[in-house]
Figure 1 (cartoon, rainbow, N blue to C red):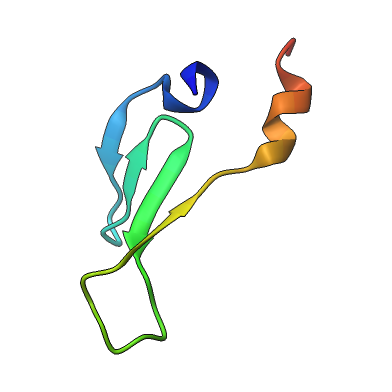
Figure 2 (figure 1 turned 120 degrees about the horizontal axis):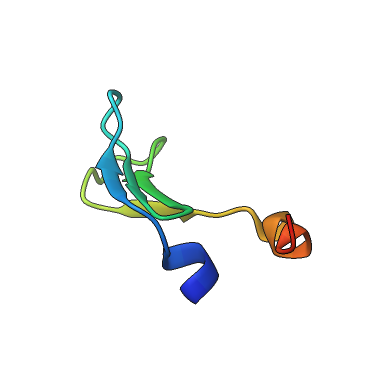
Length: 50
């Protein structure tokens, strides 16, 4: 969690919330606009030494 959560908290021009290396955005394709979708890239864990 320290790896993914470290970094700045930024709102993108399209309205996504970036918390470190985690992206939170409104879930599309559903009629309920209050649900959030969290995205992260698990392959970044293999590149920790870079």
